[in-house]
Image (cartoon, rainbow, N blue to C red):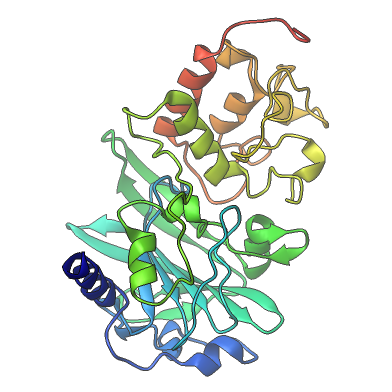
Length: 339
C-alpha cells in the first residue's frame, strides 16, 4: 500500500508543474496584465509547459464549445489547499486561478486560440480572456472579446468555417454568474472524479480531504453508461450553470442540474414562461417520447442567435449531443400532460 501511495504521490507531483515563478501578485492584485506571459503560469509558454503549482485536469463530460479542444489547469499558491465540496465547486482559496486554453488541431498539433483565466481575488472571482498571437508565443488581453475565423473538421468528418467568438469580460459572467457572483463551473467533484484526478490532488497536498463516496458523473459518450445518466450529465454541464434556481435563467423555471427530481422542473410537459421564437410552434420543453415536439431539442438544433441554446459559446450544433438528447427523449414513455 505504501508503495502504491508513493507512486501516486510521485505521479501527482509530475502533474502539478515544474519549478517556475507564478506571479501571485498578478493574480491577487488590481488591474489586468496585458499578456498571459505576465502571470508566469507556464515555464515555456509556447509549449504551454505548466509551472509549479498548476494541476492539469479534465472533465468526464465537458462543455461543448464548437468542437474546440481544451487544456485546463488549477493553480494554487504554495501551501494552499482546495476544500472538498460534494455538491458545488471545490472551494479554492484567494490566490488560486483556473486557466483554460481553447484551440484546434492544425497539422496534427494543438494550436491555441484563446486562454480564459479565472482569478480568485479578495473581492471574488475575476474572469479575463486572452487571445494568442499568430506565432503562438503569447496571448494578449481582450477584455472586449473578439472574433476569430476558424476552419476545422468535426468528428464525423464534416468541415466547418466559423467566426469563433471570444467572449468579452462581462459575457463571462453570463455563464459563471451564480446569485450575482462569478463562480467556477467545471471544478465540481463529480466532474473531476475519474482517472484518479482527485486522488492525485489529495496526494499532492492540493485537496483537504476526499471521502470514499465522492460522487461521480456519467461520461456523455460512454455507451456502457445508462442513457438517462449520460443525457442528464450533458444537459447539466451545458445548461445548468444558467438553468438552476440561482442562475441567469432562474425565472424560466427549467432546472437542468442533476440534483433536480421534479419532472416538471426538469422540463417534462413544462410550458415556457416566455413564449416566442425560441419555442417555435412547440408547447412544452420536453414531450416524453416525442423529441420533435420538444422545445429543448428545437433550441439545441438551432444556430439562430434568437433561438439557439446555449446562447453563448457555440456557432455550430453539437450533433452528437443532439443525438444523445433525442434518443433520451424518445426513450421516455409517452403520456399526456398532467398524467
